[in-house]
Image (cartoon, rainbow, N blue to C red; front, side, top):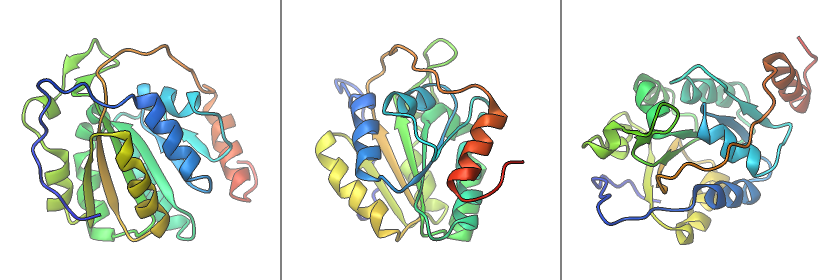
Length: 204
């Protein structure tokens, strides 16, 4: 998957069904460790099927890519997929520069971009006002950057994730709709200990 620097074009574009995309991505990456951004990204991942290898971030807006980076460096033999939204990633732009500096081959950032802040009233986010996350990621040194505009592109993305030749950022243009919430476990200690157990570590 080659680097692209296309400016998002939203006018007249309906976008991908986010729940279908997330489910198919997870199904295609059964061994991956998954970190979710807050809000809708967590709901999408949980709706696809709860797994011990899912680490849900209920808060910590802007922290998903940074958590994914730490996990990828600590677990170099496992593919790590961060599934987050455009608003959450916009708040954590600095993490993209650190990812570019560290170059973890097993780290994949998947941004579900609906151009809105879905958790605070669907205000337009900067990605619908001119900010191109793909260009930002490429400028930070992230090796593979792609724009995903249809489900037909998912197999190629899954292939690149499996190849672990990243770091990778995929900007997935999804529909700006408000779906029913599928709420993952809220107990942070439980989620942490379950995730640690999946990695073979004792509870803390």
